[in-house]
Length: 315
Length: 315
Image (cartoon, rainbow over all chains, first blue to last red; front, top):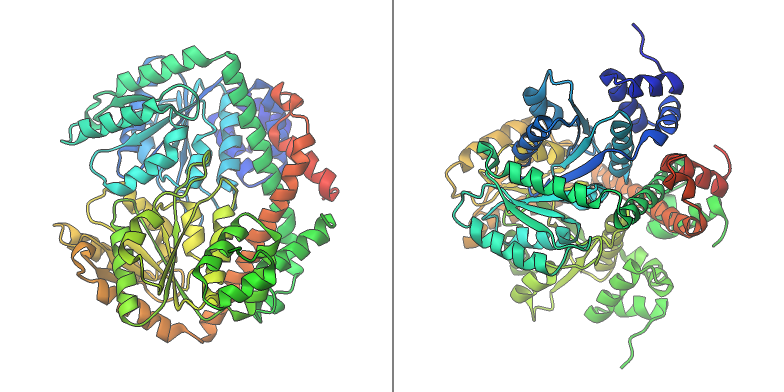
């Protein structure tokens, strides 16, 4: 049996609920296939209904366990859940490692859960582009909640989760000073802080520190909530879901949320323009001579400026 | 006393060893000032002498302590050391948080150590661009070793440290499965694995696992070395420096290293072209109407394609 490649058939199959075509479309968009782009265009009017939740935090904080528990709780509440697992990937091999393998064990056979892993593939901004496009596909395919889980806490991950409707930042007691600095970096994107492994002795201290920080206000206006969990035994997970759901209920349809979604779409256009320009630039670079740079007679920056000028004309 | 702003004076002051002008030039390049770009152009022929060492790894692995010990060891060996601390920064405030504050306590007053913090400032690829430019400045300013330390382990950080002559990946026993996945992502960029906090019980297991992984080969040909350290008490640090220095001695001037540096400069041109194109694109986006996207009548991707086509003509 062949799988439809043209945009119209692909879009129709996704709207009809085909898991296989949904996965195919997401892969096609990541690979930049024309049929996939056409399908997205046809699907786009059906987007805007899903509530997207980003989950990020330090490695070892137990995000995977927490996300599994979140998915299970959403399923009990009757939601269909799409999951995008953002994996750290090798800049050389480009492989997605973690997501499918771990999570499909738990939700295999449940048609209400769709899991897809996305890797960076080494393109600047490629992760943001692929994630945004995949989230639109899951939205159009009728998933009520789209969970975007990142493994790392770098700028890439921040760029990804800041596009979510609600962002959960997972922390864990006792990781030392560097966590404090990371906290500062992601403070403004957090709607909810989740202190996982809260059965550890210094959990209360971390909760107290976060509540103090939260009073200074998040980047999205309201002070972030702070919840505690021990995801391995399911403790605190319902409270976390309650918190996310009450934010969703309070914000959906408000003017402030409309502004936030508009900013997100604008950001998507910026990232997409940059990505497409880069693709054009790579062809140009294929022919350029690096000799003067290798002889250290000119800098990479001045060669770049010359190439850009050749492409676009002088500033 | 005024500080020279024109390129020629700035370049001369940096070559003459002025710490203040060196800092000023790095900041000027990050801000895209014309005088700074001209100074870099004048300095560029003096680059190519420093050996750059990238240090990355999971949060909480003790990288700052290890870097302090590295710097001290290099100083004892008579090297002048330039340090670029790559900080996680808020996409909203763009602040550099960690580096100067922590490390300047240890090396304040030592004129042989220059420390500068770099933050992403929210630009796609901005971190790589700023780091590459700053490393050239420190190279021209006569620092023998340029240490590039990252806080996170995301794609951005990988992009940054892969440009170093030698890359040290710091790991720590007992951080669980997510670390394994990160390890897979950074495996190919490691020249040396450093297992820090090696007095912990499961350190030998991690060392054994890394040695097995290392036998599969790093991305740079030779199998990465694996060293153990307890940086807080100075244990293992000299061995790490020995390892880095023997790699430097063995590789400097070889054809393979020449190829690697050429690849790095080529990568810099690519990143710089992409960055400059993006700057041009932002002006263009200022006038573009998002209305159709906000009404969900068209996707951000198709609007982006139209804008790029308007700029460059059809593919």
